[in-house]
Image (cartoon, rainbow, N blue to C red; front, side):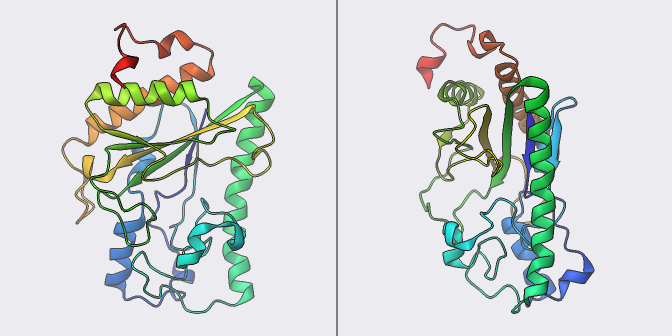
Length: 264
């Protein structure tokens, strides 16, 4: 199992800060809205490998398709290299070809690390499972395609080719058992798979888990809430379900209560 954590960082190196046209205050505000804060802490399990992007998604977004014509969010200025904020304001100055190439080198390096991790899993286990780890704001951002409210506490994202339906069902049931609400492919859909294997190798599996930030942080300040540890513990149990599934311990997906799945 590989934990993919693409959006946890606020880091924008000094050499790139002049790319942005926002004031320091406005840039900090946009980071608060867009960064999946603390997901590198919330999503961890024993010695499970994690592939973490250590730069802000406002610099370059490793979760996007690298070619804008394939990326729906590029229509609102939020393709692989954002040009607009979540509210549609101008984010960066016009970048030169060389500057874009330098940012894409960060993107490529991250995806190379993810592909290496997947190859390692395939080589040792014959299969690989990517858990795409995210959080989301409790209220839709203007850039979001799904504007439905209220939003669920958790969102599970799946891909018809790469995500086992029985795994999604088990995760959904356990989330409901915790007392949370959950959406499947809503408000966010899909899950990331390394491009080398996308829709071509069914031994590479993936599922996305997104957690509502209102459960664990003050969204206006970014400060952790007192229940942070409880949310982390619940996410760890979800990761153990996935790990057991990968290891073939499918009995771990079957709850003690006979009507557990019926509650979903």
